[in-house]
Length: 100
View 1 (cartoon, rainbow, N blue to C red):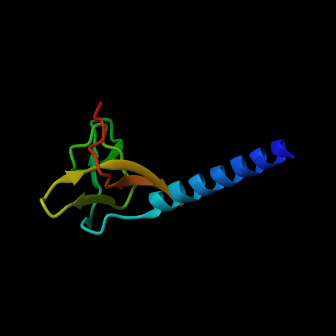
View 2: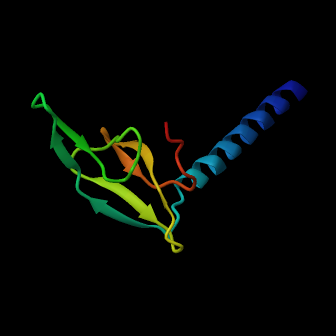
């Protein structure tokens, strides 16, 4: 009987912690203003077209059509690679991404 109550308590604890962590991840910072801008294109000497973002991200990883930058009230801007609904692009995050 004691083993059953310990298992039940563990299950309840894991469920509550998971729910709290999941809820925390869905909150957005409301002081960020997202701005959409164009993806730039260029052609190399071989005639191949390359698409890139004018955000100084290295490598210039982008979603074809638009990229997202975000600035907070102090004008800080952070870029991150994200994946949403089968589209890969950049979005804001709370700390700068590591540039390689």
